[in-house]
Image (cartoon, rainbow, N blue to C red; front, side, top):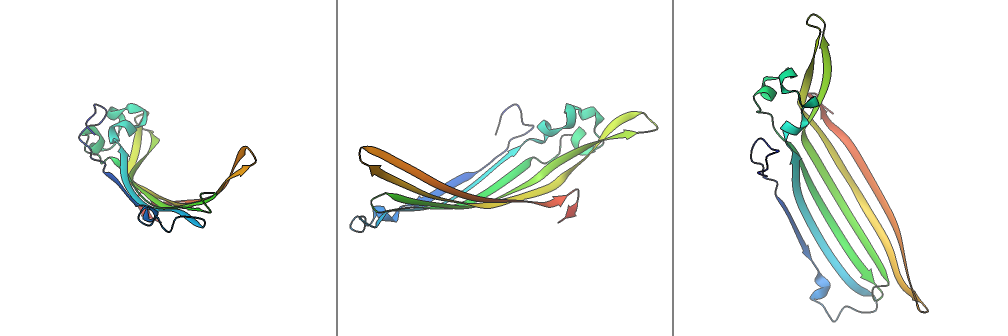
Amino acid sequence: DDTSLFSGKCFYPSMGVSVVPTEWMPGNRGAFFSYLKLGYAYSENGNSSELRLPLGRRDRMDDERLKNNIWDNERTKTHEVGLNMSFFNNKVDVDAKIYKSSTLGLSLGMPHTVVSAGSTIYLVADDNSIENKGIELSLGTNMYLGPVKWNGRFVYSLNKNEIKKLNGLTY
């Protein structure tokens, strides 16, 4: 990223790849197995450390890295694997996804009053990390009941967030 919001240039790569084996096997598509797609995706994104300063007060920060703008940017890395299938001439479809995201460089700022000086400074740690992982499952139907097309979908998802590192302590 090379916008004016960031203190420096950032590179956040992403890529995705998928394969549809049923396109290679037209003779197998039919009454039972209509469609199959397998996919994998990887992406990165982030936030500039400049945008995460508490109250935007660089002069009130008790950390030389912040005053000199040499703090690492927050970065999230995500992996996702997916499967899409359809059966009975596309009347029933199943989707499944598994994902994992890891965010590194999270900053947490806490205001702290210095008693002798009577002013507030911010103590900041940027070595925090969090992990998010989960699954998403979906079962759908596409049917005609006379002249009316009826679609139904059941969705199940499970998501787990876990703090991996907080203020220098590993969990």
